[in-house]
Image (cartoon, rainbow, N blue to C red; front, side, top):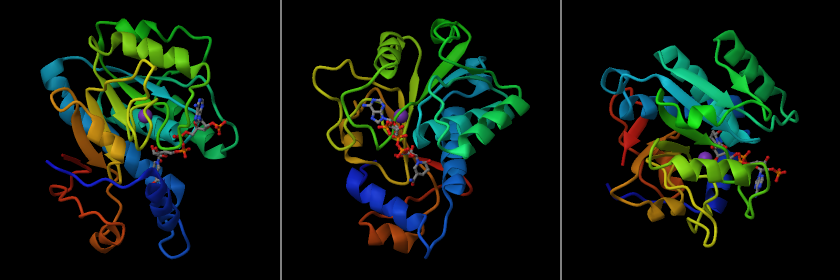
Length: 241
Ligand SMILES: NC(=O)C1=CN([C@@H]2O[C@H](COP(=O)(O)OP(=O)(O)OC[C@H]3O[C@@H](n4cnc5c(N)ncnc54)[C@H](OP(=O)(O)O)[C@@H]3O)[C@@H](O)[C@H]2O)[C@@H](O)CC1
Ligand SMILES: [K+]
């Protein structure tokens, strides 16, 4: 399905308005809906009944893309999967993230730190997919450690274990796509949030299944930002593009 995109700059403006005084969404609300939509895309793409596997590695970055991953992991656990979260750099600047981690503890979802053996989950035969919630639309190259090494590990296994990227394949330029000279992720699934960004035009058609999620804008608001409202089916939180 052909889709319109909006630039990283316009996407940031769209967010400001969504969380501005007129509309009044909180970041927590948007993150909850975004994380839920990613979990639903995973469930549609890798149903337990077909894959007979439940383990999912969620790699969470230090910002809100990472926050989406923490929310997604919680919903995956409720759906009956066995998520494990690798969260190497916990930004303490936002109290909300530690509440999301407390919720994961509450649901018995392991949250590994930088000195835990996370790579075991990359190649375990039990792992059905890996959720890339490292960076989203605020990534600015070049990649700083430990994330360069982490992304290289993901690139190594991406033909054996499907990668599901949240909003932007980590390491890609939000508008331009894969950055020349870096080993780029080639995800099996991309869940664009709110509206696809221009890098989504660089997805390999035969390889990457593309969903849009983050069902929290009205038709008039979409049109105001230059895209058609997405025809989400019924109560679905994602639409396959
Ligand atoms: N707004 C919405 O509608 C919604 C937005 N949502 C989500 O928010 C995402 C955007 O979140 P975001 O702005 O926090 O940025 P994000 O991409 O997580 O990264 C920021 C972090 O990465 C770091 N960093 C950057 N470059 C780096 C490098 N080269 N190497 C290393 N580190 C680097 C940077 O560190 P700093 O530069 O600040 O030290 C900072 O800590 C968006 O993609 C979507 O998924 C949903 O929650 C809900 C709906
Ligand atoms: K990502």
